[in-house]
Image 1: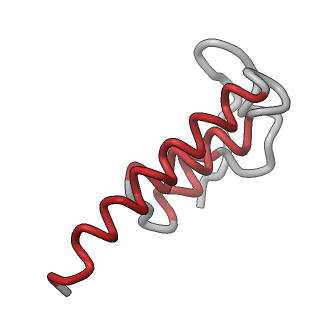
Image 2: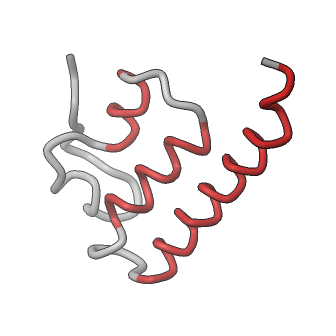
Amino acid sequence: MKTNRKFQVGGDHYTKLAIQPTYYALANGLGVCEANVIKYVSRWKSKNGLDDLRKARDYLDILIEWELENEQQR
């Protein structure tokens, strides 16, 4: 299974990782909110600092809201 790319558009913050967030998300069948949490948490130290952690938290909040609104339908 492919886990990394040698080329990245817009920087190298993902090429330094053992497994790039996109490949992790695809291999594990994650949804968009889950994938974005992984993405932002994986890169926060090498790209946008606390802004990336805030973005990750925002996607977690969206996922939690979605799950709470839809848990009765399961």
